[in-house]
Amino acid sequence: MSNALYENINKATYDFPHMEFNSQNLTYISHFHNEIEIAYLVKGYSTVFCDNRKIDASEGDLFIFMPGQIHSFLSTEPNLYYIFKLRCENDADGTDFSTLRTANMPIDRNCGLYRKLIDNINESKEEFERNNIGNAYFINSLANRMVGDILRYGNISVIEEKEDIKTKYNAELLAKVNAYISDNYREKIVIADIAKHCRLSEYYFAHIFKEITGATFFDHLTVFRLERTIEVHMKTGKALTDAAFECGFTNVRSFYRLFKKHYKVTPKEYISKTKAK
Image (cartoon, helix red, strand yellow):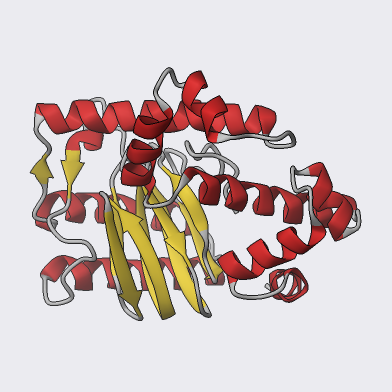
C-alpha cells in the first residue's frame, strides 16, 4: 500500500527497475512519482483514475503513467497486476518526461507498442525468476528498451504549457494535502482544516480535489487511515480495533463499514489474503 501522494517508496534506480509480479487486488490512493510506471492487468477487473477520467479496466489492459501524472487504482473484485517503474532521467538527452503523455489510456492492444511491452515484461519476469549470472544487466537492458519503445512507438504528445502549469500545481497541492494528512490523520480532520491549510475556500478545495483525484477528500482520508490501520496492525501486532483508534477512527462499527465499502472484503479477509502473498 502507498503511504504518500508523492510516492517515495518502491523506487526504480539507474541500474534496475522496480518490479512487482504479485500485486493482487490493487487499491492505491491518488499518487505520482518521478518514474514511468507500467501497470499490466494480468487477471480480473479494476478501476483506474487518471487525467480526470475513470477507466474500467479488464484483463489484458496496459497502462503507462508518465512522471508527474496523477493516478490511482480501485479494486472491487479479485485481480492481479504486474507493476514496472522505469527510471527515465537522461541528462544527455534532455527530455522532460513530465511533459509527455501517451495518446491512449489504456494502450491500444492492436498497436505495436502493446506487443513490445508485453513481451519485454514477460521476459523480465522470466529473467528475474531464473536469477542467472548477469541478471541485473539483462533486466536493466530490457527496462531501457521499454523506455525507448514508449518514446518511439507510444504516439507521444507534449502537453501544452498551460496544461503543464496545471499539472505541476495539482502535484504541489496534493503534496501539501498529503503532508498535512501524514501529520494529522490521527486527529479529527474536517475539510475546513485542510482547505485553510491550502489557502483555498472549502468549496473550491472540494471541487478541485475531486477533479484531480476522482475521489472526495473524505474518501481519500478514509483510505489513508485504513491503510495505516492495517500497517500498524501487521507491524506491531496490536489488535485491529486499537490500531484503528490510533489511526483516527472514532467508532469501531464505522471502521468495519468503511473498510468493507472500500475493499469489498472484511479486514480479516484482507489481512489473510495479504499474508498469503
